[in-house]
Length: 271
Image (cartoon, rainbow, N blue to C red; front, side, top):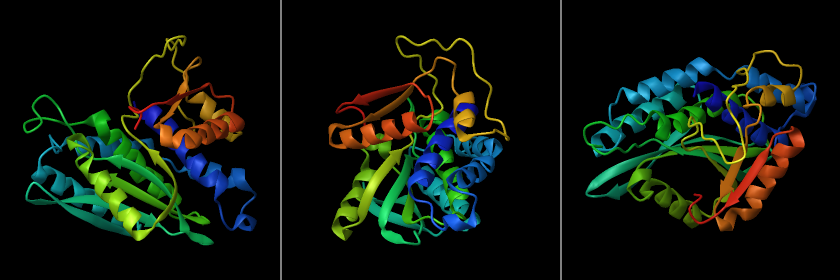
């Protein structure tokens, strides 16, 4: 699970950095920026965050979601990333989304987002819903993405949103989207990290033999990404019909930067 999260996190980091690095003259080029960021990805940080999120026992109720929102807020603060609560009323309570912002240097009004949800669900959610995969995995990845991007000079602004109440009608993300429209935020692209620790075999693929996990030292970024895949694995890039072009763009990016096997999926239930 941890290795797959590290791989997906690495792909997202590459996606953010490839198009929008600033101050290139201070490095030996684009690959140097990418390799530096990937070398600082901490599998232990990810594992620790997933463990800590599970210790809340359930992230379903208002009380628990409030506690978790405060925990995430402090995590971003500890990474010296500007963070704020996006609050909204629901069921006579005030719920919190957690929004961190890494401001762009040259095009600060252009925004790219990495998002996840921090609430969880189960058959008895009020009692036990630890949600290690759904969605502590995505939440941990968003935090680690922030930690690795905060010291990279980016042209565009990166916002990292971790939403409440996804399991109860996507109320948290709906509220953020509403406010974003009202404010006229120029959001150019969004990467949603949800249930990213789950290993699933797709028809036509074999994954009996696991490839080695990511290593600290790789000669090229292509090797680093490929080594973390199953030998015959498939990377699924999915989105809803309005995001069809974004799915295609992400697919072209992945295929152009390495020899990954890509499966594109567009449908109303992919979001």
